[in-house]
Amino acid sequence: MRTTLYAGVRNALICAAGVALPAASIAATAQTYPDRPLRFIVPFVPGGATDIMARTIAAKVNEAWRQPVVVDNRAGGGGAIAAVLAAKSPPDGYTWFIGTISTLATNVAAYRKLPYDPLRDFDPVTVTAITPFFIVVHPSVPAATLAELIAAAKARPGKINYGSSGVGGGAHLTVEYFKMTAGIDLFHIPYKGAAQITTELIGGQIQLAFSQPPSAVPHVRAGKLRALATTASKRVSALPEVPVMAEAGLPGFEANSWQGIVLPKGTPPARTAKILAEVRRILATPEMRERLATEGSEPGGMAPADFRRHMEREIAKWTKVVQATGLTID
Image 1 (tube, one colour):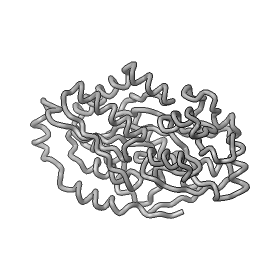
Image 2 (image 1 turned 30 degrees about the horizontal axis):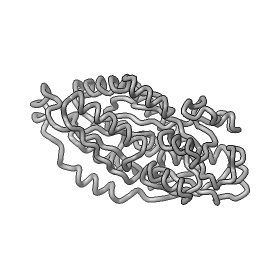
Image 3 (image 1 turned 180 degrees about the vertical axis):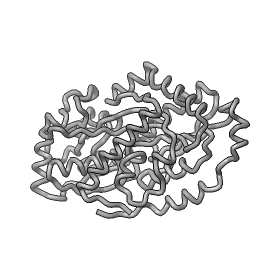
Image 4 (image 1 turned 60 degrees about the vertical axis):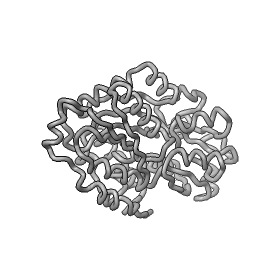
């Protein structure tokens, strides 16, 4: 399978070049940080789980720090356009990037010529949330269980389609992992974000998706979608009736989405520490913990060094899946 990384990445590199501030300018504001608006770059369109998390944190930071936080959605290129823009931004603590399993792990595994390196170009801050997927289908799909879905896919190879947030992303590779494990073939339709996938799935334009709880749960409860299984290691309290993959017939299958905040490489450690402390404070609030639990997510908060090791493990895991499935992206 081959595809082409969006040409817009090149434009992002060109636009981002030359915006770095002199070191003296960064040092001059060290004692007053933050003394101007901050920018929070999101690699997907508004409405998805990553965007919702970014906007929630941005609002809390604004309240605590008394500085505006602009949420900047830069969709496209499997998240690479946003990642390049963030990586080339001044390392002064005023540009944050909410990366995901896609932009910080699976893109490394899937793209042969990725225009950035998450381990080289970013300073990790912390994971914000770890979230399983639900396998959800449109009600017209003749499958009430995962076993029935697998049987239907085997009977009609390539005829059941699914949507993901981009080629090589976390949802896409999780479905590839599922296809490999179940021995089935599904047809992939890539989109630019979770919100669009949900709309298309409810409308019947696509038949299946691996969706995160914030996108799936409300519509499953409303009867607009049907959940067949979750990729978590245990049942999710938001939909406790939905079995895990092992219970549904695929023992050993587990895959989680995740998101976390990183900064341009070289951000002053004192500013990184201040951002980490604030994000941890937000994640620890009863309001946030309750919301994440309702959505089926676990709050993050790990130390920067642990976050880096997490990225390294995820890159290694998904590289094996890419090699096994033969997926290559230029």
